[in-house]
Amino acid sequence: MNVLVINAGSSSLKYQLFDMETEKILAKGLCDRIGIDGHLKHKPTVSDKKVFDEAISLPTHAEAISIVIDKLTSDDYGVISCLSEINAVGHRAVHGGRKFFGSALINDEVIMILEDCIRLAPLHIPANLMGIRACQIAMPGVPQVAVFDTAFHHTIPEHAYIYPIPYKYYEENDIRRYGFHGSSHRYVSAIALEHLNNTTGDTKLITCHLGNGSSLAAVKNGKSIDTTMGVTPLEGVPMGTRCGSVDPSLVDIIAAIDDLSIKDTMDILNKKSGVLGIYGKSSDFRDIEIAAGYDMDTGFDDPDSSPDKRARLALDVFCYQVAKFIGSYIVALGGLDALIFTAGIGENSPYVRRAICDHLKGIGINIDEQVNAVRAGDFLDITAENSTSKVFVIPTNEELVIARDTMEIIFNRK
Ligand code: AMP
Image (cartoon, rainbow, N blue to C red; front, top):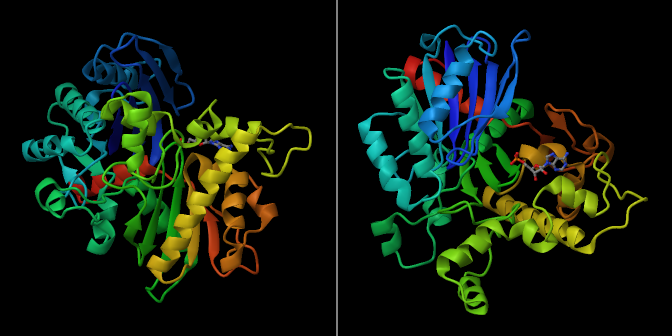
């Protein structure tokens, strides 16, 4: 059984083809600059097949999918012999609104509900729908599943998801905290639970998905009870280019300073803020850590560097805010068994993990700094002997969650 996992953005489409007997990736790739000039990077994992990495015309998502299928089935680059070897398609869907508590088999009703969710995620859902429609055209009859970023957080209690604004916006317009990165929080919390070996059934985890977009979740007994992102992914900790939680009056103030519309002001908070806004030169944590004078391997000061003050400040603001949310989630959970770091920064930056955990020493959370500098690429327990809670690094795998959910929904197989 092979499952094709699709993550469609407005001008990009990422894919991975899984063999679900082994859960191994047969091929993966990225269609980029769709609707602009087009570029495809296709990477088979089968040794005698070639990588394709070239500019190629991709006017729409439909052409992108059809070129991906060509590559997947071609003699030189392919890993399957024909289209019928794709048994199902799983789509990452960013927002499921108040209707979806789990993954769903895509049919006309699901598409209608997704269309209704556009008002909650106007940037993301139209792109997800383009991906779904493109697959329906290219692979008629192949069952498709939507896996929602918001679904894992449907267990958040009312007191954590209701915003203190007039209640009618919740009742009439579905405005509430939804949260995102659900597949990632779900995947790493399940792995952490396996390693904790806690048989009491009473477990308290905080998962920190720290990447270009970052969010934290408080996970009690395997269920999300709070998360930092809100009705949109703008809320919570500062991110690469998003401001995270700030005083909402800033919208008014910035609009007045620069004579901007609300839309243009929101663009600043979404695309020009976060660590990019503070440092000014890059949103990439590797660039910022190097500019700040940290050794990327150890996470400690690089003695040969001349640190850029704003790069250091950007990292300080980020790590402080993440630590503050961790503190608040220890309150929400009533304690902590394990703190989990995942995603591009969480998995790869010894500096960020150490700087966040430095803020947590006062509440008994300590990491082993030697182990923290190990680049494992796999599960890593960085807990120090004197720590009151475990601290784990767990590589996330959102695509595998989507592939597994797709199998479960279509073939009733876990
Ligand atoms: P993601 O969105 O999960 O792909 O994460 C992307 C972020 O991870 C970018 O800001 C990268 O700079 C960051 N990242 C990747 N590798 C490293 C590394 N070795 N050290 C620090 N940050 C990293």
